[in-house]
Amino acid sequence: MGDWYSIGVAVGVGLGLGLLLSGILSVNRVGTGLALVASAVLGGALGLVVDDTEEIVSGALGGALGAFAAAVVVHGAMRRGATRMGVATYVGAVGLLVVLVAFVPVAGYVLALALPLAAIRMRGRQAARYAGLRTLAK
Image 1 (spheres, rainbow, N blue to C red):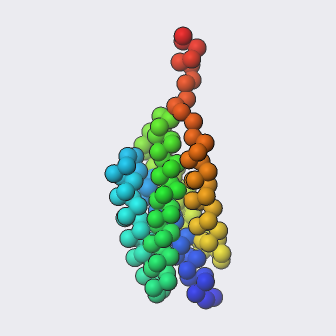
Image 2: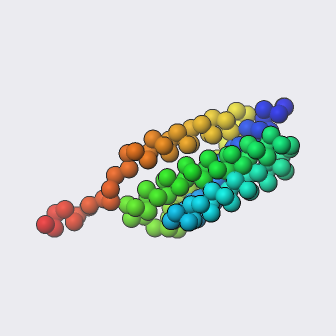
């Protein structure tokens, strides 16, 4: 198909890998940093498997973007009382789905734009911990 397809696949696979690692590791700030670095390195390594220098850079960039996007979701969910394994399961499943969708032409590019933009948009809208029935107990 061409270089544009392999670069898109590398970005998409890096995104999915970043989502997966960040879902598992991003419970606190240290884990977020570790997930960011690990997903960039592994995304670059997977880019090397795909092809040349462009794929290495795009895989590393995709991994970092995926880790950032998932970290926003994980931090928000943990702040509102979610469990670690539940969040890791859901975010990891989305990461695997992103890896599969990355093989569709142009989908890697679209996901690379959509996921970080959605995370930035979510960051400003996150509510505090849900009060639930505690408000009725007063």
